[in-house]
Amino acid sequence: QVTDTLPREGPSSPSYDWFQTESSVTIAIYTKQKNISLDSVMVDLQGDSLRAETFIQDHSYLIHIGLSHEVQENFSVRVIENVGKVDIVLQKRENISWKCLGQPLEKHDSFIPKEDTGLSYRRCQLISKEDVTHDTRLFCLMLPPSTHLQVPVGHHVYLKLSVTGAEIVKPYTPVSASLLSGFREPVPPPNKYIYFLIKIYPDGLFTPELDRLQIGDFVSVSSPEGNFKLSKLQEVEDLFLLAAGTGLTPMVNVLNHALTCMPSLRKVKLMFFNKTEDDIIWRCELEKLAFKDKRFDTEFVLSAPSPEWNGKQGHVSPALLSEFLQRSLENSRVFLCICGPTPFTEEGIRLLHDLNFSNDEIHGFTA
Ligand code: FAD
Ligand code: NAD
Image (cartoon, rainbow, N blue to C red; front, side, top):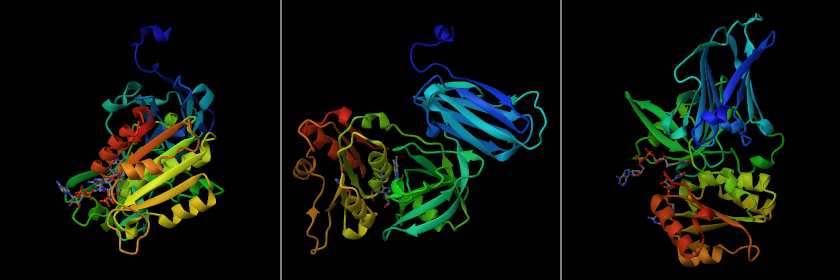
């Protein structure tokens, strides 16, 4: 029995096998877990080197092989959720029979805690850049055809640029291209483009360099990271999102997920803190979404409004929160997400505790 030899903590060790047809080679990964989805798997094919990382709970299982024969750069990944099996289907360049899959490369067949694995990067091409506010842009990057990477809801990646010989790396949270994307038919291919809403700080280290990139230039994108767990949203009826500035970014996909995949959801409310009206990211989209889906409401709060502003004002405060955090039913199951500048997030979490929300009901997106 395999399980007898395993340490007591952590998931069971996965295994893999491979088989072939005349034209294809399939690598089957048996994760021994049922909650595996397409965003649990990351695959990069570079020449004959195949690197496939499967995230299983807080562990990473790595297949890293120098393939014995050439394959085409396009491959497919499928997940059979109820048995926890992942298939990576490679297309042979020549229809000949392979005697072996290939040679093991560094850390092949290892299963280690995710925190002990380094980040892996792939070069992505800048496809478009669009102004969203006076200082925030929507960047669209194209993943290489030989990469499968989907960032789980609420997780982030690192972007890396080389500037005069030095590497600069900063974390960013991908967003769906539009807040309404969850409602669009047909759904765009999820695995080709990756979008970021990024605020440019003129005196910042990374963002001015990113902003200087031309369409067609490359930026490296890491494997995903993050500790947000979608399972926390199970059975949730009232979801409250508190965002400040670009702290909106993790909320975008949480909101899309809530409105499309949470049957229990009754209400989702966003309180969005900004300095001025001009700083509000996707204001129009948020208002449209609230108009279209009655379960969603949004409220804007400005800390440095113009005299004409007749909406809510100030920083996060007990008065603002207690008015906002009204449950749709007296005992409804709630969850709260909060993200923004560190003092905002810390103060917000402190105030939520004062209002008797428990740690289990709160997720703070932090560094
Ligand atoms: P920095 O060089 O970090 O400077 C930013 C500002 O702070 C500048 O105005 C600078 O003058 C000032 N500053 C720098 N150092 C100091 C100091 N010591 N004292 C006072 N002021 C200082 N941002 C987004 O726009 N979109 C996202 O989706 C996003 N996702 C993120 C996800 C995570 C998990 C985290 C932790 C952060 C995320 N961020 C996001 C923020 C992002 O990682 C960068 O911090 C941000 O882009 C600024 O980077 P920069 O190098 O351009 O600026
Ligand atoms: P900003 O400076 O424009 O401020 C937006 C609002 O935040 C303000 O209007 C105010 O209401 C509030 N705020 C700012 N400073 C505050 C303070 N000291 N105390 C209480 N409230 C305060 O915001 P920005 O420049 O867009 O910065 C967004 C921040 O969000 C960045 O620090 C970024 O790193 C962070 N962020 C984190 C993640 C993550 O996942 N951890 C994701 C995206 C963004």
